[in-house]
Image 1 (cartoon, rainbow, N blue to C red):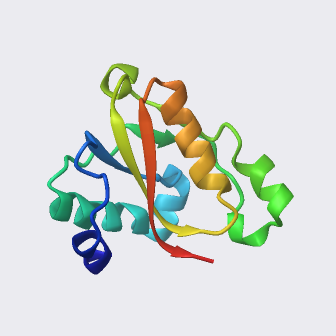
Image 2 (cartoon, rainbow, N blue to C red):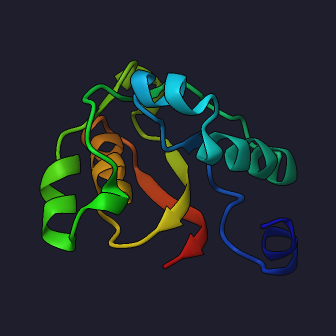
Amino acid sequence: MRNFLTRYELRFSTADMIIPVPLHATRMRERGYNQAELLAERAADILGKPLQNGLLVRHRYTPRQSELGQKERLNNIANAFSIKSRLQIQGKSVILVDDLLTTGATASSAAGALKAAGASKVTLLTLSIA
């Protein structure tokens, strides 16, 4: 990711913040870390942008997306995210970081929550596409 971010001239300079796709608290306790958060920390350092942990919240526990088909993934993750402070999002350009993009259901749901809270732009940065 470092090579990608430093090699290509992308329009990240206009972004106001970086937000990782959060895990539900239960999944975080099970796993012990959030891989999207680890990637977002590095991206924030490289791009010189503030990292906003905890602003986007996964408030609904869902079965693992990897265990579901494409149609089930969309239904599974719908309305699973919320925003802690709409004031911090309104009018802001956000880089949303996730580790893996498969069907795009998780990223779409998270981006939808950010847009509904008033984000002016949401750009997805992901490490891998499957």
